[in-house]
Amino acid sequence: MDGDGDLHPVPDAAGVRPAVAAGAAPGHHADPLANSFGPESPKLGGVALQPMLVVAAELDLLRDREADYVAWPKAMGKPVEFVQFKGQHHGFFVVEPAGEAGSEVVRLVELFV
Image 1 (cartoon, rainbow, N blue to C red):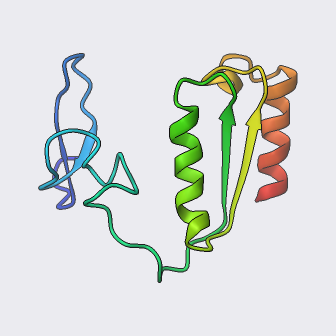
Image 2: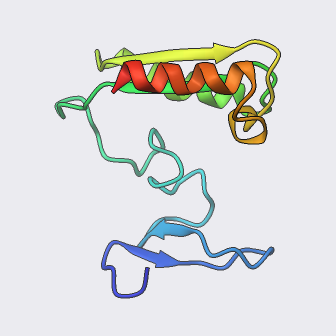
């Protein structure tokens, strides 16, 4: 991260050094790297975005945020495929990659690319 003009490291309470946009207002909600549809984020209406695949877990505490993330580019007519896995928690495909749901994520990614 050092030497990059667009990013700078900011230590958090746990000692993790996430990247945030230089000059971003305090808090992750305003940082365009953490919140792509926040007030300081670039306007992407006229940008030709590549298709996106968003995989989410039904029981993920972030599920509403994930749904918002999908709705944002869809509202601009961008190509987004959203797949939500019922009965799964955040990171399910990392916790049990060889499980049925984890294997289905791999299959979806293979088809998508």
